[in-house]
Amino acid sequence: MVQQPYVLSARSIVKRFGPTSVLRGFDLSIAPGEVHAFLGGNGAGKSTLIKIISGQHERDGGTLEFDGNEIGASAAAYVEAGAIAVVNQELALLPHLSVAENIAMPRLRRAMRKYSERAAKAVAVEALSLIDPHFARESAERVVGDLTLHERQLVEIARSLGSGARLLLLDEPTANLTAAETARLFAVIRRLIADTKLAVLFVSHRMREIRQIADVCTIIRDGKTAVDRVALDAISDREIVECMGQSVEPDEQSDAIAAHATQTQEGSDVRAKFSVSEGNTITIEHEGISVAIRPGSIVGLAGAPTGPSALITALTGLAADHAWHVKRNGATVAYTSPSAAARDGVGFISGDRANKGILETLPIVDNLVAAQRIVERRGVARKKEVQQGTRLLEALNVRAGSLWDLPSTLSGGTQQKLLVARWLTLKPKLLVLEEPTRGVDIRTKREIYALIRKMAAQGTAVIWWSTEYVELVELCDTVLAFDLDGRPTGVLRHADVDETRLANATGMAA
Image (cartoon, rainbow, N blue to C red):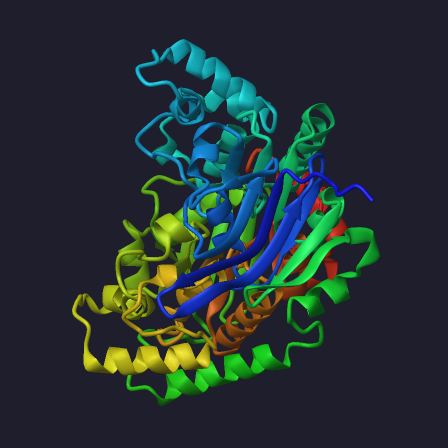
């Protein structure tokens, strides 16, 4: 029997960070012309392996081969030569450069090669047009720092798709894309595979997408190989989740975590900063649409990013000029900054975890109490904050070496739980969530759901924007829908909320 040639073969890969072993003898093989789903829970080691393959980390043990040739300590040379391209979960763009410069620069691999602004724009438009022709035409000259997270995701993917690589590593590439953009991305990937025998390693927690695009899967669990190269049509969703070490039964553990978190906040010496009463109703109005957001309700936002983003900026003080009118108990509210909104009881969790959420250079304890310090206008850690942080980590089932470790030592899903934890003790009047389960596994999603439901049960009004319609159907009392141009199209009440109606109301596939 002739052994199948692999573009990439990883054998017995080991990676340690201090005393912590993240990868413990992991195996992975990717063949040309296939989309290989790489699955596992948050913290299992997926992103670490991708960073080893793409030369961002050096492995501590094991072997890597590319096209049959053994790779030395680092695979960085293969990335620099254009053989391997990667889209990381946390985007790696240069914010001070234009879209065209970010896409074209990696192709200037020869020293002193002349840069042509006109040629760079042409390259950028061509690459972006693969996914979104309209965005390509109007955004090539924009500065990346001025783009939304959704738009930056498109730029990152376009840069990698147009690289001519043999191996494409995609770590949660669709987390910020609409259904239509995801469909176009998948069409481009299929075309590249047919034309060039491109090999793709695809990471996602969305089983529907995995089934749509991938051929085989490998599952990682606690840094080891749980399933090696199994055809997706030979394994069920339930079996995949069980191999990841995650329950597919009702949320008993998540409910326990939410209950523990509630006990922790009630037992702490930090009192809720805001009074939440039945009369504290927030009303949002725009273009004939009016929605009353009452204490304890969960209101979903559905549609392309333009519409939900405009409403979120109005609610949280992120923009001075906006079309939405916000009233609380009949009085107009217009916040001048996110900190002003926070001090008036409006919490916000950004979907841009890396740039607008987690404080990367500050320890875990500072990340946990960041919102509280803004509200209280303080900046110095106190003994009771450390005690509070310890209780929160225990309540949220977060395993961390120390409160003084940096959040980069935690998985992306665990970092997301830290962002939710910021608001647990404050009991805000309104909590605005922007794609709060982006890039998190099934177990972590359920834990976040339970925490948000618990906050709503205690009187916090919640606004939840998600591009996953199944999430809105499960969680929301009411959903405000937006069309592709960002205009509100209607309000769906709980009995009317299903994926088909949301797709019809937004013009986006479910």
